[in-house]
Length: 348
Image (cartoon, helix red, strand yellow):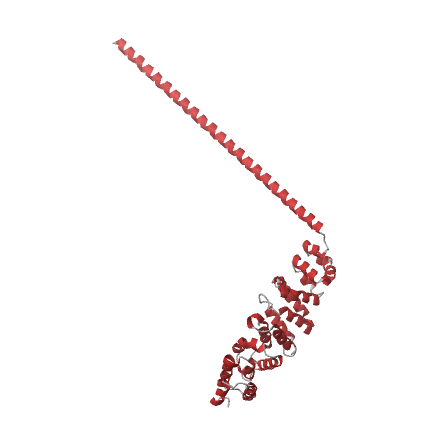
């Protein structure tokens, strides 16, 4: 029946106003049996070309692949809530041959992957879909929720509804609080305060989970901690009491203690001044040592140059003396020859 050409032709181009009848026919063709590939293809083409209504896909959802469902999932979420719940049930059940189309974790991750502006889906539709999942505690268990949060926190930035889901998780599964503290710590390392909407949700979460969240708050940079305490003043007194414990206070930077009021600005200024003065003294000492070294090097250079000059002058004097002696010796030899010549002439 599902492969009848006449029936497939009618399904591919149903008359206007026959949508309800069409849905009854499709449910009849798919309930308790595996539809033909031709019927599945015809329904998909009908959705893509004419109806543009994801409801028409509900009867064949269990027989689609993961890769086929993910792209149309935002349109499924955009269905009226009752119809979305029906579609969700068929996706999670799947077929007897292939099993679930999406796992519970994949469903929640797909919901969080919807961008209302990009996909044209109202934000309330997305939050309603998320609520519908949390209502099914036997399917969306504590383990499933933890696995989903563990994956979503790695996205940069985290999804828009991430902090809302964290808050839901704490309400539904209070024993997850220690796990949630790890999630919040990872958000601090990802500088969650750079995303204003998520930052608001983060602060609601630390307020809801105090005093366990105090250790997370003390991981914030001083400026962000001050912002958090200004936004939620009720956190300040118990956080100060927590941070004042000797074993905790000793590990906190002084700037953090100033934000909490445990240390004063004057102490910080004094410490900074001492540090600055020490740096100046060290710089001056270094400069003095450098100057002395340069002076010593200059003196050595001048001494070396003087020694070289004296040596040069000595060499010059010795050379001149040698030349004079040589000249005198030459003149004496000449006189001796002249006298011998005269004696020879006289004898003759």
